[in-house]
Image 1: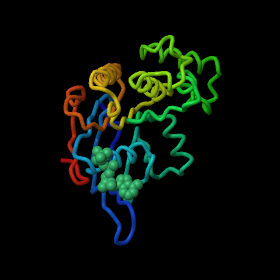
Image 2: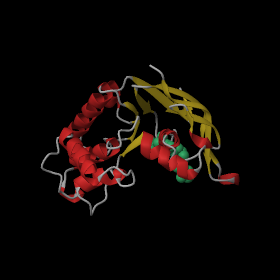
Image 3: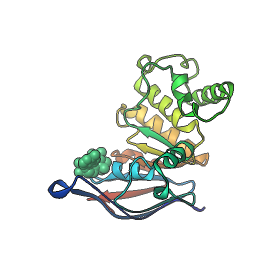
Image 4: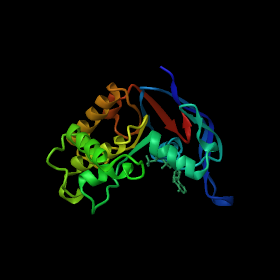
Length: 222
Ligand SMILES: Nc1ncnc2c1ncn2[C@@H]1O[C@H](COP(=O)(O)OP(=O)(O)OP(=O)(O)O)[C@@H](O)[C@H]1O
């Protein structure tokens, strides 16, 4: 295994002057290719902030992030957006599906700017929806789907670009426990297929699906 993600002394604060809050302190983290890493820890410990930094959705005050040999924060905003599209799939607690697009159209969205022919985009999205157990739901709008189905559409959308890395922030937080467990089993399966996953979770029951758990407290890894 080789390192896919390496951070060196990542520091992040929000605000300025007296209202400045130091959120992350000197985060040194290495995630190997093929790992399924869970980030656990109390509310406010900096888990989501770290995840946004790892995905290049946010920039640190100082420190480095190397993904697949690329020094991410040395890139311009535009190159970083290209990098995100190519390397990272995000899954959030609130799904963030476009309400007026069908399940199929939502999954195809990340491919819109890739130059891949429309027919191939559609084929890939259909195949993923099928793998997620959503055959027959392609033309449903998000509002016509259950929470678990919406989450699976969001996961299919995150996977459609074949990213090297999946970043998931409380992916089961809005789901009932049975559906959440099914989504976790799905993540486990994706990981066994070789996907590297970093997941923030509050749920101790889900840590067993990960190959490693790191606990955060007060902006530090413990
Ligand atoms: N945009 C922001 N502006 C100011 N402070 C922020 C911002 N985002 C997060 N914070 C603060 O940073 C700290 C860490 O927040 P973060 O969301 O990373 O923690 P978390 O461990 O993911 O928490 P939770 O489990 O509750 O989601 C908190 O004190 C939060 O209030």
